[in-house]
Length: 484
Image (cartoon, rainbow, N blue to C red; front, side, top):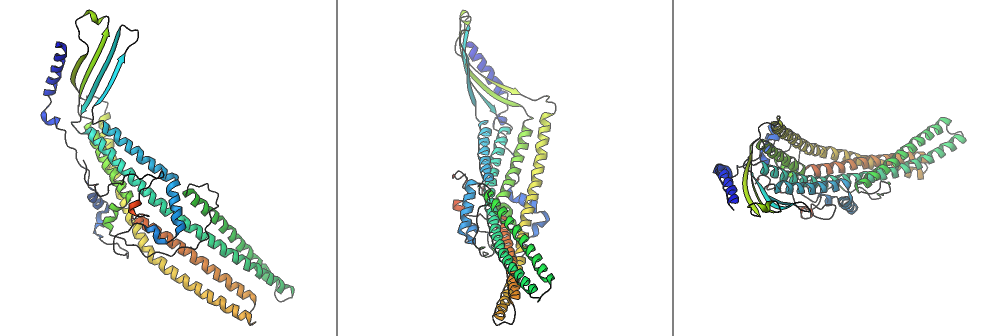
């Protein structure tokens, strides 16, 4: 018993040498707040309180996918959310980050273990011990906080991946519809050109036209057939691209017989200052800045002494020790201080590394913020341009339709022949193809704008569904400025 008390007294004496102020753990510095970082990212552009291009007032809304009124598109997006491989990887990254939070947080608690030795040896030993590192300089807390920031970043990445996939599926669906309609129009153009070739053949046979006219008609037919073959290939590739997004085998078998949906009303754009804090990808970028800040603090704290408290209870059975005056079990408590003296510059290099890493993620944040603002400005600028182009092509289609009807009427009364009727029908089909192409581009541009504005593709109440059907914890947008 005297030996045990002696060891305990030594440990208490050692602990008494540690200043009381150090036992109350040092507080950690806080990373820059999200608003401050956003203001830094905008720099001289912070004077732009409104968008440079015309925009609808109001806050961006969620559930933008429903605005297209396409039930099949809604079904395809839901399928992609269940089977898309990239989204499944993003969900796994969330679980990995959550596990890392538990790993780093466990270092704040004491650790305990047991070890023993038995068998035919002269001595049998069983020892149970516990150890606790006093986190005086905040190294462990900084590492745990960095892990939490990475976890929030991975959750935001997952939500952003959902939105990107929903937008990509929508654009792929519109592309497939467009390719299908273009293929159908080209089939009609080819059919009309076949009739023109037959008409020219008859005219050449009766001497009403030179041979060159039928050759020209045949060359035009070959060009149209080539365009049809390209359109068919484009349709098959569009179907394969959509199937890959849906997690299906890319056989190119998906059909899109529906028409393009109507363009929804222009969405509210909010304010530039709010965009950066609203988009999930920017939330993830901010949390990576916060994580780098804490990793730098942890690296700096690693250069300071480490203080630990250890306790153990050991039981011994031995034929040898039974000859001396000893007691079993033996208990002891001690404290240890490890101060790095020479590490070959490793600890300083680590601190320097994370200092530079923090600079790098801040630059990456700035670049991402400006890119996000640029995406919205480009989308707003394209709105007016596409509206004008669609209006012009609609007028062209209407004119071609009127001309085609007039030629049909003239052909019925014999004032013109079938050649002009077929040519006017081809011109109408070509104008309709151009209109379909521009409307498809307009819909795709609208999807890009909706994504850039940071609105969710579904209602917020059901957002965050992962491929397994579970709902991960929502990333704390409002609480990002406060850190433990």
